[in-house]
Amino acid sequence: MKQYLLLSIFSIFLFIGCNSSKENEEKVEQKDTYVVDNYTKKEVDIIMRDGVKLHTTIYSPKDTSQEYPILMQRTPYSSAPYGEGMKIKIGPNIHLMKEGNIVVYQDVRGRWMSEGVYDNMRAYIPNKTENQSDEVSDTYDTIDWLVKNVENNNGNVGTWGISYPGHYATISTIDAHPAIKAASPQACIGDFFFDDFHHNGAFLLSYFRAISLFGTYKDTPTDSAWYSFPKMNSQDQYQFFLDKGPLKNLNEYFQYDKLDVNATASKDKIDDFFWKEITEHPNYDSVWQSKGIIQYLDKVPSSVATMIVGGWFDAEDLYGPLETYKGIEKNGKENYNTLVFGPWDHGKWSRNTVKNTVGNYYFGDSISLKFQSEIETKFFNHFLKGKGDKNSGLPEAYVFDSGKKEWKSYDAWPPKNVVKQDWFLSENQTLTSNKKSTSAVKFISDIKRPVPYSEDIKTVFTPRKYMTDDQRFAARRPDVLVFETDVLTEDYTLAGDILAKLKVATTGTAADWIVKVIDVHPSDMEENNEGLQDHLKMSNYHLMVRSEVLRGRFRNSFEFPEPFVANKKTDVNIKLQDVFHTFKKGHKLQIQVQSTWFPLIDLNPQTYVDNIYKADEADFKTQTHTVFTDSSIEFSVIQD
Image (cartoon, rainbow, N blue to C red; front, side, top):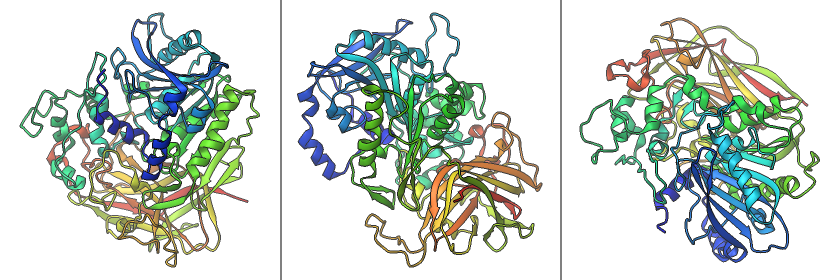
């Protein structure tokens, strides 16, 4: 049977982070017969309650002298190889593979070899009729078939996945089948209006090339990629998108019956159903609301143990895992629900590399390896092979302090000894614990010279590295406001969420607001980072600890946008996701405020229009923005 194309391998690599170094590739080569030697593979098409068949691959241990749990991953990224070939590695990690588990992969509805029509973040139906189906029922029906038909299973099922497969792991916990005893949603999508393609209503333009992966229509099973990625013909994404202008000029890349995407075509025609969904639904309306899963976490039964995993520097899915943990915690007081967050970008905890870096920044050795052996394996073994009670030996929250570069364990997240503290964006670029005065700090937001999110000249599929990038290049621009503490005389640890409480004004009627939290390193910092880009130094390194954007029209409601009144002082509150970071003695804490972040997010016209995806060139105008010095940042601070 024809195998899936290199293109699909590329997409999986980018979305779930399963690459490895040359050293580890050599290790894999030495072990690449383990699955073949120790497992048998079987492919089946499991019939759902509405008659649709989902392609499922089952790896069972050849040793049939005992019963094994089932570990399952449902994925839109292909359960290949199809036919006689076998995966080199199966399961969440090499330990669980070698200990012996029945490992199952399934192509979700409408993807690859499964029947049906795919829908992004397919909406959950709380009260289904007999013939209705959703991803919850597809998961339930699959597990029901597996426990009844797969030989040597012990009746216990665990689910896991990273990124989109992480979302399906969350789905498995909703109205869960009684056989599910453990689930580990990892970097799990929670809501497409806040994860991946949007951040607080702003469109992640940097995800442009990924749209077709999810939005190219297919209604028949296939083992080959049916989508293709837009050809940008440029290595400079900043200039590419600047030259393209308004978002509606990108429609031509999603007209799939055209051979030449540069040819003149209708500006309104769109063949890609996901791009059409994005452009026709600019607000958090019923379409996006129905696709979110966070609001249904009250339907996770206490019989399912959950371990939510994420990375503090995950550019793709940071909202999802944090809100999933908090949602289960809020609604399931009797649930076993734990959180693991490390110094990782998207999916890096699943890799076998020894050195753990994100972009330019080095956090330590064997961090991912320790997670796999001491946390993940222990979790699944306890609930699928062991007693399965709440005494797992694991902490409620196992989190990595990205400033001190060390793991900490807490019996709650955020820790119980956290207090809220406000710091004010004061005059003379200072960040102070008390409000000094109320004055106006102005800057010009030039629509032709937006602030770049990275100083690298590149074209990426999805952005990652920028999450730890040195922010000196931005701090030295006149359209980025900088507020900074004095050199800290003692350690200062943030643990939890951050709320930017801005007081702003604009000469226009629309604006985006971006807030970044920066750890400014001492000038005498040791230069011991081997992976640093050649043009950088650790001396005075501006490490971005957290950042977020709010599309200003959504300051009061994501569902009902509204314009700014020109020159009127206005409150804009921006929630930044949780951090766990110690600003060490000798460092400085810095806040940067800006209004463009290009092309990470699309350009705001800075003139209010009903739908930015349909804005005209004439709508885009340079404006002057103001930040008032009674603005503040509310931190969650550990108090000893």
